[in-house]
Amino acid sequence: MRLFTMIFERLPMVWFLLGLLFNSAGLYLGFESSLTFGYMIIGWFCCAYGLALFVFRLREHPTKSAARRLSPNFISVGSTVIMPAMTNVENEQATVQSDAE
Image (cartoon, rainbow, N blue to C red):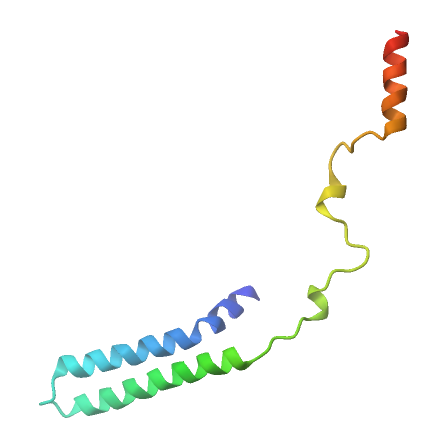
């Protein structure tokens, strides 16, 4: 479901870009054409809609969901090493054994 989240995050930019494309198409046609004003109106509407979506997304305060909170039984990265370090007692026993040999 991450794909849908990425698409919806960029939706205001898509609307704004679409509006800019309509405006540029209207300017490309020139003011002699009757379609120019239609393209310009649609373009400004799309730009305004994209900006409105962006502002509404900024005003929306996301709440931290229960799925993102860490549980009390969470294992940190430091405790999952392959060979944990020896404690002082084990270290002293190893040095005594090596001295005895």
